[in-house]
Length: 303
Image 1: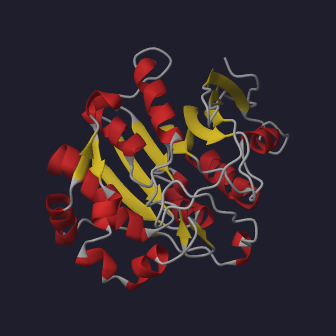
Image 2 (image 1 turned 180 degrees about the vertical axis):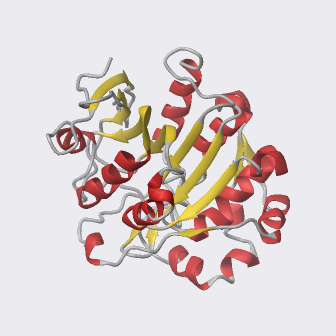
């Protein structure tokens, strides 16, 4: 059970928290540490919300770009594009927006890029938990509507698609959806998967406004919201929670994987939990799993 109740219903945050202090630089060395403490991200205007429609280039990318097949290490044997090979594609290097991302020294570029080309490690922790608890604490199936919030590669949403759900994938960057998420959908599930998926790009406040302006948000109600490593900056906590508040059904759950603290940007589950349980939101939240190893210590929490 969650430890707080709304006046008329209970909604649950399930959070996977990694306890560590680290930031990442993806280009050119995935393992190189970078300090992004100087990034004033809230000062930059957020991107407007747009729906990304399926185009022939998505099929071309899925066919031409090598994928990683991790076998039994990922539930449902999900495949995903090898980003290092993707970066060699003329379709990517010829795109001015993507080129500016790739030449940046940071995973986080204010107003431009929110890290979607990197596959963050807490995603695998959350995938493991979802699979372990499938049919028990976690119920995702053909009648489930799922929102993959800050999807990046889209593995969480792809897991839900593999369980038969209908999934909306959201990422800040249209480029990430175009070059990674949609081709990954095609590589795993083909046209059948695309029929149960939609793709939206934009900032969380822009997505919120779009949803509210479409049938008062009634079409944006989800049974389950999945999200990994999206609360690394406190400036966007309220945008994130306002969108969750709008989109989560009264009986729904958010499963969130993140680290306890993100060095240099101030986010993490400690600060996030304080806001989630405040009178402003009054959500219930439980840690459902704590994962520890040499570099990370994720908790799985339930709201």
